[in-house]
Image 1 (cartoon, one colour):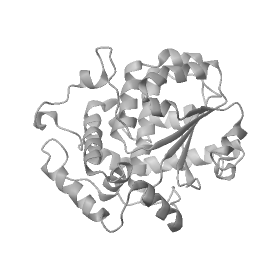
Image 2: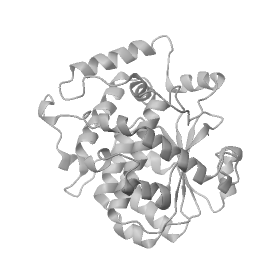
Image 3: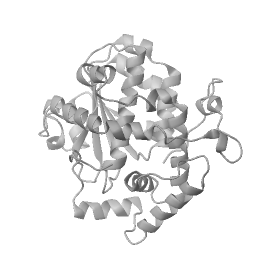
Image 4: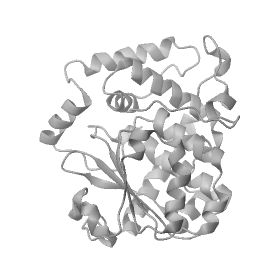
Amino acid sequence: MKIKSELLTQPTEELSKEIRIELNENINTRDRDLAAIKEWLRKEPHLPNEWEDNPLMTFLRGSSFSLEKCKRKLDMYFTMRAACPEFFTNRDASSPALREILKSKLQGPALPGVTPNGRRVTICRGLHPSLDSQQITDTLKLALMIGDVRLVEEVVGVAGDIYVLDGAVLGPSLLARLSPSIIKKFMICVQEAYPVKLKEVHIINTSPIVERFVNLVKPFLKEKIRKRIFIHKEVKDLYKYVPQEMLPKEYGGQCGTMDELQERWTEKLIEYRDWFKLQDALIANESLRPGKPTNYDELFGIDGSFRQLAID
């Protein structure tokens, strides 16, 4: 995928040097590591024969250049793409259903800049207190679509992710329509299938409903991630973690409004429409997997148990 318009500001060269140390990235050996992963993909009968260099390098960075960890994450990524068609098909952001969510239901743009220690910040906030079950699923789909764009466009690499969740508009009907199975699938995607180094989750404009939502999601998170969730009574408390100036205007910052950022991300997702379509064929084929094929019921804990997730 050729990047047509720059939406993500890349870290400076000086900061990139620090990030490379944190990610265990050696500029003298990373091309060799990339070649090793590409060769591994060609030899795995159940996985796509090839993929673009940029996302593969993002997976290497997200795996701290551990080849074995990178292989596990890539295998899970292509496995989840096959196992969760509700997230990974029909990814046309110009379709009426997705366009409605992007325009009037929820905003979740990754911000242009990075923090002084090289972390990318994403802010999510609701615009409408009620979403039906399909819209909830499509909202999670859109979050993973942004994740896929970032696989391609984080060309330098970042030192991790910070998510800010604004709970000001979260209605009780949303909680009633949340499907535990959909949450499980999404959390497996985020924690096992994507090269995300989740450093912090900050929740602002909290309420009893928001706290119920957090308690609903917590069982699906590893303990170390639970400890990275911070709840703030005031937006200004967020400034201790994210520089005020890099936030949108609604949160006291200078990087434009949420509407402007959302529109730019909407345009970016539409720009990737053909690319998303090409990705439809890049899935794991369980009938060709050496050994035992993946049992989706076991993977998702359909029997009522939820397997512990091994994440970075």
